[in-house]
Image (cartoon, rainbow, N blue to C red; front, side):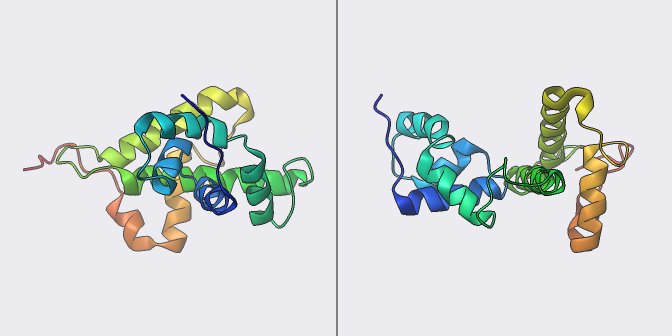
Length: 158
């Protein structure tokens, strides 16, 4: 399947989505909704390293690349993307009538992948990444934080 490079506008849109924590394939699907699935899958891999996308993402970060950032800036940047990814997992999950919300399950799967990739180098401020995410959310959106509380497992969902 032939690779399709993003236009400047597509690179900027894709870059904004990825910076907000949207996974690559989902971002490509939002930018190229009318393309065939196979094309979008190829683009999801290729666009992540495309020079136009890299330039767009650097522009979104005030003109600083990863290596130009200080350690504190890199940590804040990575944490912002991690929180964005968790938030995206929550809002993009289809609603279900199960004891555990699908969004929470997707966030927990994301955290497990993050811990697996980062190993011991990743040490959240509290016991879990989910707890950190909820604490941050309580400060910015208390109603959403309350809605994302795990249901009481003793209560049956009808």
